[in-house]
Image (cartoon, rainbow, N blue to C red; front, side, top):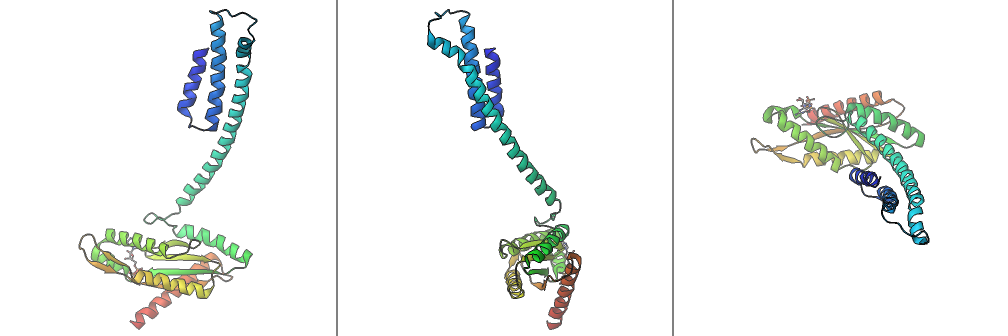
Length: 256
Ligand SMILES: Nc1nc2c(ncn2[C@@H]2O[C@H](COP(=O)(O)OP(=O)(O)OP(=O)(O)O)[C@@H](O)[C@H]2O)c(=O)[nH]1
C-alpha cells in the first residue's frame, strides 16, 4: 500500500508542472503514504495504547490527506477550465491563420474581406469614419524579370515589414494580391488617411535593397489611393478603391 502511494506520487511529480495544484496533490499523497506506513509499522512495533501522540499520528493524516486532495482536485478542475478557454482562443487563431498570406505573414484577400465587413458594421454602429488605403508597387514585374522571382519574393516581404513599421497599432494591413496591399484605418478622417498614405509612399521611396545574386541596388516606388467608407458594402468598397488606384496610376504615368 505504501509503495502504491509512493508510485502515485512519483507519477504525479513526473507528469505535472510545479505549482499550487501539484503541491496540494503531492502533500495529500504524502499524508496517505505516511498514514499507511504507520499502519504497516504497527504490524512489527507495538506501541502502548496510552501514547496519545501515536494515536493522533495514525488517525489524523487520512482526513488531512482527503482535505488536501479535495483542494488539489478543485484547483486542478479550475486549471483545466482555464486551459480549455486558452485552447479555444488558440484554435480560433489557427483557423484565422488559414486566411493568412503564404508568402507574407499578414492577412490575404479573404481575411481582408472578413475584417472589412466587421469594420464597416463597427464604424456604422459607432458612427466613426473608416478609411482605406491601397498601396501598389510600381513596375514590380521589372524586379521579377531582372532579378528573379525569389529576389522579388524577398523584396515583397521586406516592403510589407516596412509598411507595418509605418502604421499605427490599430491599423490593419492585408495583401490583396501580388504587389497590392490594403490598409484599414479605423476612426480616421480623410485628411489623416491622406497623410498616412503619403508617409507610406515616402517610406517605400526611401527603401533601398541590395540584391543577393548581383549585389545591385534596387529602388522602389509605390502608388497609393485612399477612399472613405460610405454606404457601400465591402466588395463594392474594394472595387471603388481599385478603380481609384488605377486612375491614380494612369495620372502618375501620364505625368512622368
Ligand atoms: N516575386 C513575386 N512576384 C509577384 C507575386 N505576386 C505577383 N507578383 C508579380 O507582380 C507583378 C505585378 O504586375 P502588375 O500587376 O502588372 O504590376 P506592376 O508590374 O507593378 O505594374 P504597375 O502596377 O502597373 O506599376 C507581376 O509581374 C507578378 O508576377 C509574388 O508573390 N512574388
